[in-house]
Image (cartoon, rainbow, N blue to C red):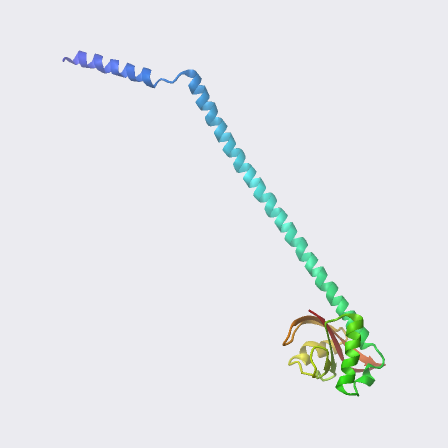
Length: 193
């Protein structure tokens, strides 16, 4: 074979290959518009996903903030109620006279107040932080940090609020000084589980 024959046969092979791989105009338009459509759908899904994440995270953040405010409000309301109960029990005129009696008499008084006012726990301390009586136990078991945590702050005039852990439960508590006239004789602590 000569060189010319080889070039001619190569040229005919190339023409045949071009005809075989040549895509009609309709198909090219269909393929390009489909590709553009797929790209647009992917872009739209990415944008919607971004917007949805933003919306959901904003909504979750707002719900958490609102929930936190509700919890704070509930806790403050409970402490206000406990302050009121401790103040009411501490202001009963014959409480100072009762402290000079025996433990069962003081416990009966505290249990009556517990039924009337609704706290889960009532404790009466003397000025030194010693437990005189409490409603959760039959005996006047002492609280280790009562003087620092409850009595001193309550005697300062502001009262005291916080959490108290006993052997049986955790309580939200408020303490208020008990006085007869101008003489403070102890502290009343009211608590709820």
